[in-house]
Structure formats: C-alpha cells, structure tokens
Length: 79
Image (cartoon, rainbow, N blue to C red):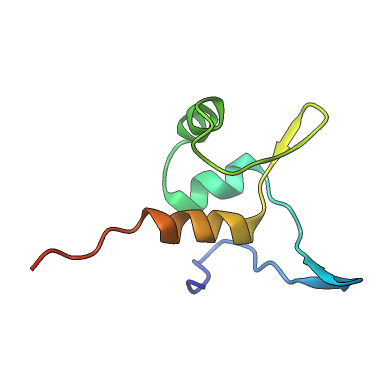
C-alpha cells in the first residue's frame, strides 16, 4: 500500500470475526487523496467509476478499496 500522504489520516484495520474492517472515509478525504475536487469525485460516483459504500443516503469510501482502485488504474511505463 502507498505511504500515507501528509495531512491524511492513517486508517487502522480492526478485527471482527473473520474479516478485517476499516474505518470508512468521506468524499473530502478521497478528493484530497487523489488531488482533485469534491465535484470530480461526485462525478466519478455518478458514473459508477469509483468504488463506494452507500449507507442510506450517505456515500462513504473504504480506503483499502480506493488504494486498490488506484493501483488498478496504473499504466506500465512505456520504454
């Protein structure tokens, strides 16, 4: 996993049964992590291009899923 960026909280996993749970983060955290605006993240959510956790009317993000999503978007360097 990438090193935490300055100003971003470190998410610590908690054991509960057989699965690891992490604290969900809000849209501002994701925007800051990606270096984009909240409006851009809202557009990605509307286009279903970013993994979300919907809880009622609230939209939250699993930081581990966001990191995997970033890793999947990486392109190999062309030589």
